[in-house]
Image (tube, rainbow, N blue to C red; front, side):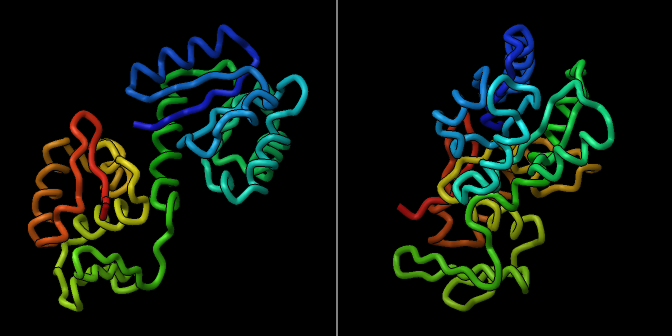
Length: 231
């Protein structure tokens, strides 16, 4: 699941959000100001839940600063605020927010929005693949061609299915990040299709088989998920 940083000056709300999001399997840290957040390793988080009306530096200002820094520019941000006017929503989105939810926060809605934002942003995180990308392992060159939607080992087409290709592309483009099965499902499968963890495992097994010796680069992290590692 995702690593989430909650930046919120209402202590009680922080605790409520942390408890409920951790129930969904997320790893959640909390902090009560933009200033304290800026002292943290923000780039290590998958998503920020950011209050707008913070004391000191506002949520809008913090978001703008993060978007100006290449290291944190692509981290998804969901604003939480009591400001519900359309002009406020526009201002939040222009400041770099990926979504905007008004207080009082409805937990079920928030969880759904988090899933949607993570699903939208997952393919863009990490090393974006465009054109051809080569990975070398044990003298074998793995080429992922984002234009042809195909993968090649030393020039030989691996003949991956669409799902196998997208799983491989996700893992390689974010190497060596570990993805849970649910994260892989959200990033690769259509949202209207019911997919079980077993389906992910089956596709990983088929992908490894087609990769041949390169299949050992697809690592299983017991209790966490899968990653692509060449070292």
